[in-house]
Image 1 (cartoon, each protein chain N blue to C red):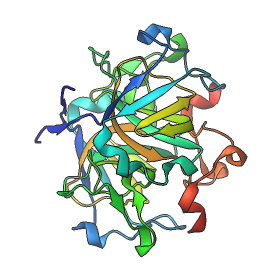
Image 2: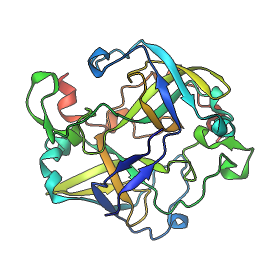
Image 3: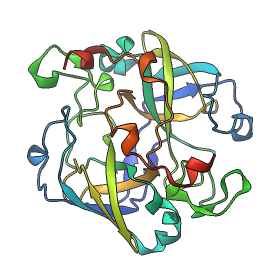
Image 4: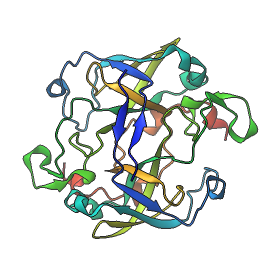
Length: 145
Length: 145
């Protein structure tokens, strides 16, 4: 298949300098705050976004250099990388749900930030859960966390 | 910023031949079924995924040829593309929540399929909502749908 090339639309400004600084995902959302700085030409694309409380940020986890097809979350049993959201995936696209605290021009203030400083941003979508009802969802090994 | 290049991990097999065949997103999930066919070398990456009822598929919406920074969902008022999940975005990455009906090797049977036949697949993650509580979420213009 043909490779796919994207031009980042912006970059993350974060207090976390390196992947090991980011708290491990757990029951509690990460409390850190920072900003998503978009290219100024994208300002019209943000119209109406400020009325959403949360956004999904798709990012390129640029610090990932290796791919592992199985990982051991929390040191437990091995699990396939596609059954986790861990970083060392074949295409290291991060999917973060962030609280949107404000927008000034093309600078978005966010919290629950789990990305490191300098992470390239590929896309922003509104967070509007309309998936299956929670009683219809099974979450495999994550149910044991 | 540097461009980012990904190699697709697989492809979608769908009854929808063209974007206009896919039902518009609405309150009800799309009922169509199909398959996600991954490269065989990725089989170890699927370990444990069958225990999840739903998956997130990140895909390259390869039929998107134009970018529009504002759109009119359902013909209504203009909204920035980043305040929607519509296709004509700067980096047309689709994010689909699909029901996982079964896995045979690297062939995943899925429903609620909203992608067209031949769509390149970039990543698969388990669907395990752990975002904000629903009473903390504001969804902007989507609240009027």
